[in-house]
Image (cartoon, rainbow, N blue to C red; front, side, top):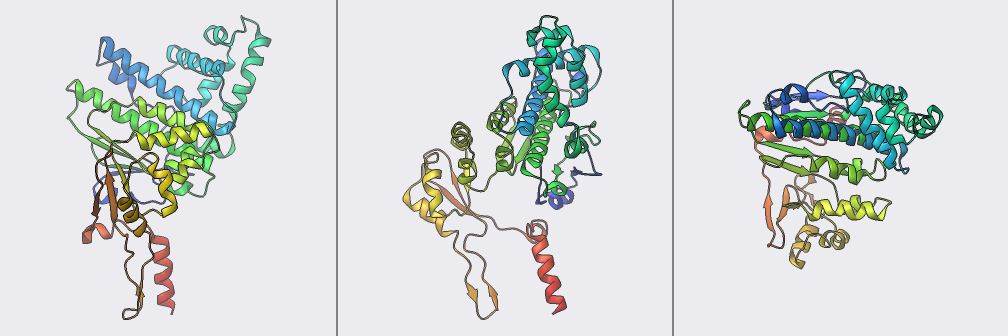
Length: 373
């Protein structure tokens, strides 16, 4: 759910899956899109129906708050502003139909409805209401101009399939700043989680075939660095997920990515993602990474030495005239709690090798130079 290089596009295509390409002139993903909640809710009753509607609104609220956090960077969203957004979404659900856009949220707030007035504590005073909402509206409008508008200003163009592998290709945005790319990745995650949750509701009601999903959340560090407090937004989004029949992998380069956050509270919460994981899989890591890693994942001296040895550079093969394979290629260590680590090596088949070239640009450039030579 968010492929920046891309690493997964060829694989998903080979599996007969769906590739959704986001970027300028490509597909659009509305950050408030949580799937067709109304249609699914119409097939339910009682607590299940109310819970599903509540989950949908909670996701929309968290996405608006997350995007505001990205735009403002180090300025937090106040409790009053959060309440105003929440009430605005409620008002939209009673007035409008379908999935709202960010512009719809702005329009509702600007219309000064009683529900928003009550939590703004303006007590019917138009001037007091403007004072309470002007900064909020300015931040929301910033998401509808320039670099943001083409990404977040329109309805979703290509709905995600739930019966086959899917990848959101965001490689067209890889040169964008971390805040933009982080916001796009978080939007992909939120939308993907929402779609899977809807599928699970339908499966539980015997309205859809039973399927199990594995969700890959790559480039975690990009979202964490998009703004202060993003750790909380990720945490809140993932807590809305139904855990039955769903595997989830969060991928980042090193523990230093998590410890590089400027706020101490955010750093501790980010490390908590690793600490609470049911399984931690590590590739080669330098020795200076070990103190931070072992503070959340217990490792013996031998396990640490093994991970460090996998970072050694490849040796030069004089007979063949090129580097030997790196000693750590495909090697990983599984850690589950305090149990001894399980080292393993991934060996790709010939079919897989062609689909897992994560250095295409380098390889193509090198090949072109050899041809010219």
